[in-house]
Length: 445
Ligand SMILES: [Mn+2]
Image (tube, rainbow, N blue to C red):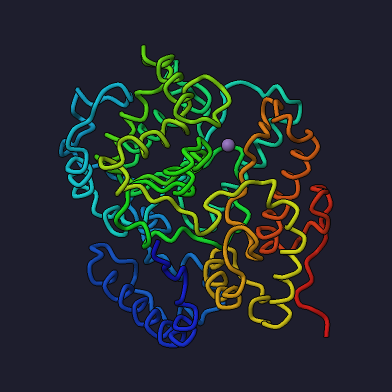
């Protein structure tokens, strides 16, 4: 697989800094001038520069030229033109059991009617996650799910992504690991403005709040999963990839793929037969039921020509990583990052949470030697607690419950430290969520 640099813009961003600030001022003045020009009912034309220097001017007065109807990403949330779209077609169904045709065209048409969403659509991601409709059986299950959810909200806020967390069963017969397929499908219809739907299991946590998906790398693909091609095609293993985190493009290919994928699910009369087929195809599969992950590997194996060229099997970084090989390394990683920051003061600079991505790019050159994935000292992107079952508590008997719960505390607090930093706090002990101390502004000496 071709290696593409994840980030290399940090240095050019720095040198362009002055140019950018100058350009931004000009743009701002231009917006102001245009606004006063086109506004039919102008407020008694205030002089911008005198406003700016008047100490009594509030921030909102100064920047009132920016229309309140637009949110921070410049999209118009308060308008839906009357021209009919696919939503007005009575035959449109959100159900996984009703096919959709010409989805790409329908989506394009909707975007044409909503030009503010069309700008930047290619990079727009909707993160989707969810958990069961009922309280967890594990007494601390709901608390853990809350913290996993908070972790996702944190990541999305920092990067400006939307998030949909769901607690409803979208198909009454598609429960547990099958539940995400009808949900992701419906999310595509509900969010034509999103190019990508990013499914992240409820038991997975972002443990690098700075890392961003290298979307450029997936330009020619429609589905991205974490996996290892030799385990798929040679070993024929049901754990050759992980279906708990995937990125899927909002397009007709994906609608068709999910239809075929779902056809091995519990809502079909062929469910038991598929269980047998999958069990005999994958010698290491332990349980007899047809599951979404084996089904996905099966499609890669048996319908390779049809699907595989659009499926990117990502193995270069922790698109999702097995928690057991990660949680023990987190303290060392913290030390490594502190060491870098000791040498590079501007990485330690206090800043607004909104501009966190800038500091992520600034750090990148110092992580060149770190590598990615297993054995790396880079923060793992996503830590997945496969086999731990935080909600039910029915963890795999391979490990003790405490190993699971302590691992989750460590990973969640490790992530939270990256968030709390913008608020001046740190958990000094990764195993103790309730302990926080003020973060020193800078290193002494
Ligand atoms: Mn999972």
